[in-house]
Image (cartoon, rainbow, N blue to C red; front, side, top):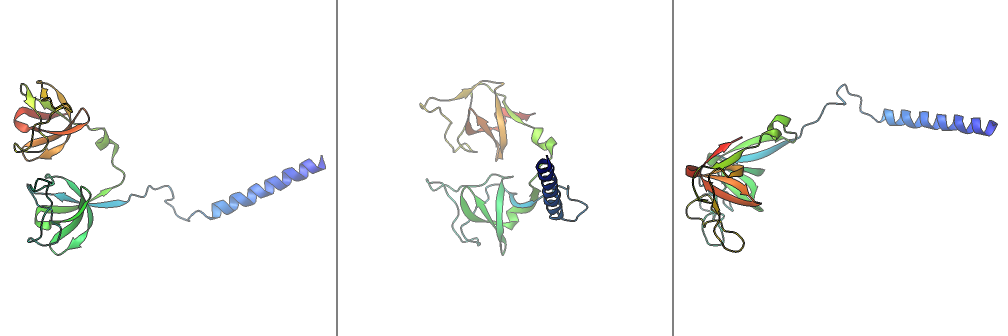
Length: 191
């Protein structure tokens, strides 16, 4: 019995010492429970058909598709901020490190914890025409979207697409797991 009581006392002492050591490691602050918000910087495209360049000057070559056509970041696109050089922001876009003119973009910050109300808002694009075709990019110079077997994709009036953004006169959408574009003439945005 004495052994049992001695073991119990030793365990109690150990727990008391251990918990006081753990408590003493905590920072002495009145706001220990405040959530720290990390600010991330982004560059937002603020123009239409803005060229993303490989060097920070207007004579430098710009990002293009494989067919040689310029690849633009649509207006409102958030680019990861990497720094600045002269009149250009150094950014990351589509896996490339590029430069964008400050004249056609703006620097913004965003916290890593978004308000719950923002997260709950979801928008849709509703087809407002008959047998509307989707495009692979934001313009009439892009090919029509087709299914994997090559057959054309026509959408009936009233079809809902997930809204992803806007580019030129087109809405960027998600439809059946694919990113597609639809003319604003034949659609509208709703909640």
